[in-house]
Length: 462
Ligand SMILES: *Cc1c(COP(=O)(O)O)cnc(C)c1O
Image 1: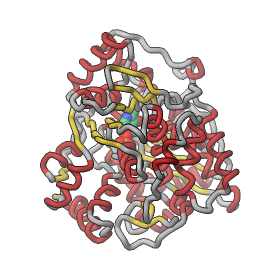
Image 2 (image 1 turned 90 degrees about the horizontal axis):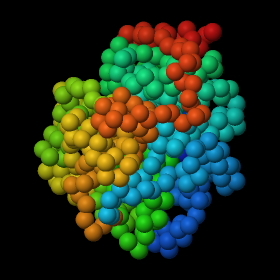
Image 3 (image 1 turned 90 degrees about the vertical axis):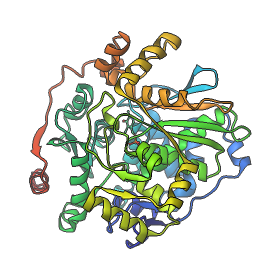
């Protein structure tokens, strides 16, 4: 299995190389050259298996010879051992034919743990074998950073730097990043918004001297390994509702398009998914794109669902690549337009294809709060604001096909918004109960590539 860049001019790589590299050297994202399909009988055979077993069978064809069968099995076991629920990704029912997939039982209480814990184990195995050391730099709107730090803290072969927008993450999110005591963990509060952090990260990858000098690796959702890990729970949940003998639909609270793109891959692999519904908050670039065909950035408006406060949805590039028949040059041209003018238009044909693959909806702040309140009243389920965005959009798409909405974070990560919406005080699970007493360690830094690179060089020299 080889991996190719969405911009068509970087060399193709093995799974291991693509995973360790992150962004391609032509600025593109790595995608598998072709997506392996799973016959109906193999999907049916997933019924009743453990999450780990499903994970193994779904991901194995993508890994190539990067890991042996037994190594890969071990990696998966270790990755999910720290989760607080035996089912890993349990389904609960919200309404007739509407189900919630709880993806928040990992160590940092957000779905990012599914991918990050797996990546942590895979990096460790691959780097130990190569005898190499790398520097991971991540940009986060809140949850990726804490998940990355949790997955890499204390690992010998890795330094992990996380840039988050200063003052724009919740206190629980910030403390999860600033309280780990391990010397290889560096939390950076950047004076800017998430898109600035993400843009600086891309700049670092495009500064080859820095990139090669620090041996830069990325674990943002641009990393193919992350997308792959997320494909698994589409299978596990769909099968438990009767797939492949019955179709299912999914609604996904979306920011960087990583999670829903994993659903698209599941569908390409043969999982009978009817609708894939994109749910956005007021930062609705994806909803506007599907509505008008114009992908136009407008600046981020902070919301109560901060992990979705994104205007440049990196993984959307992967969908565009597919829709433009894997024409890297066409994708590169759109991305150049975006970089220089802040927008691009997809062709009429591409728009029709997009609309055939995805539907979308947008939820205001008031509607998000109202949804949290009403879900609590009608089901007793306390939703985090991101999950509430999903549940609200899903409600407009219910029908005879079962709908699964992804619950992307635990409500305790966003206590203020949840309390304001439904009056409930949600406490952190016991293993994190002392989070507010721990000392914080964080460095404030300007939204400036030079300042960031200098800081990273200095830390690595210590
Ligand atoms: C990251 C995140 C999202 C958005 O996921 P994408 O893969 O970026 O679309 C939604 N909800 C929560 C809680 C998140 O942490």
